[in-house]
Amino acid sequence: MSTHVATRGNTESSRTTQQKRGCLFTVGRVLKWFAIFLVALIVLGIGYQTVATELDKGKYSPRGQFYTVNGHQMHMICMGEGSPAVILEAGATAESLWWYRIQQQLAAHTQVCAYDRAGLGWSEVAEGPRDPLTIAADLHKLLQEAGVAGPYVVAGHSFGAVWARIFATQYPQEVSGVVLVDSTVIPRRDDYPSWKTFNDIVQAALWLMSRTGVLRLTVANQFEVSGYPRDVALELSARQALNQTFDTSYAETIAAMTAFIDSAASSENLGDLPLMVLWAGAGPMSSDQQAEIRAQTAGYSSNSATQMIEGADHGSILGNEAYAQQVTDAILDVIAAAETGQPLAQ
Image (cartoon, rainbow, N blue to C red; front, side, top):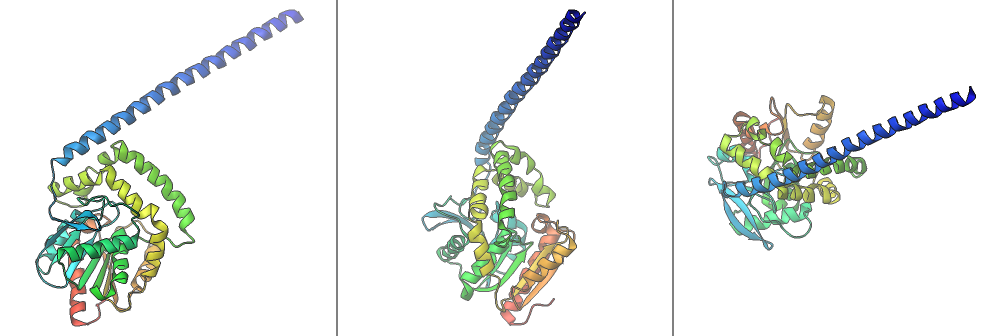
């Protein structure tokens, strides 16, 4: 009896072992084919990104002029006539064409120039670090090379809003007003470690999306949804999807973040310079966050005004014609304040 029970136990144990091995074999095969599929998908994505990038090269051409700045070519487009000239600073991953509507609107009133930072849009990649002071020096030299005389009203969107006030701090005698359009909020030194951990994950994902063409697919309709004309939206999408765009943005906003934090903190006192702060009404922040940040940015100057553009989000505040007109009107208000010496109306 005991021998029979033992034999039956051994048989069941053997059957269980075989079942486990069978399950492991099946799981192994599934993982193997999934890995093959994933590698094939990545290879196809890289191929798609490479071919699409080459095809885009023949579709578009620069709209402005090129100038040699500190050993590299930079692209800038200027329109209109008059003073003070308005200088438009695009945000991270962005270029001069983001300002398409506002530049068209402003050109009827004064000279307005939008430019591509090194490595973005049509400007060449520059060697060395891309910290905020280097970027400010590049812009200053570019304006000199192009013969665009000050004083300037500098307007920036997103990260560009921070670069705008850094430029104003570096060249205070040449700036008569500043406009911040839905500004990025730069973390403090104390907040940087947790901010960096989160952004390292985001940047790794974006790097993979950029290289495999996924980013190209996701931005395809982004600019039309934001309100840009179709031909402009297609060009913006093509430039946004370049690997070089991601690499430059990483160098400017991640690799140089500690320098960015210090420069941003040093540019929070603009004296009584006319300062207009614009916010997108449909932004992602809670009302409490908005109130705190609005109070902080309004305090950058003793002559500031804050406006909310209701219905606009971070992209449509520039791309939508009606929202862009409100930005244009705000810039014109800053010009008027700079010329008359009158305080900005709240």
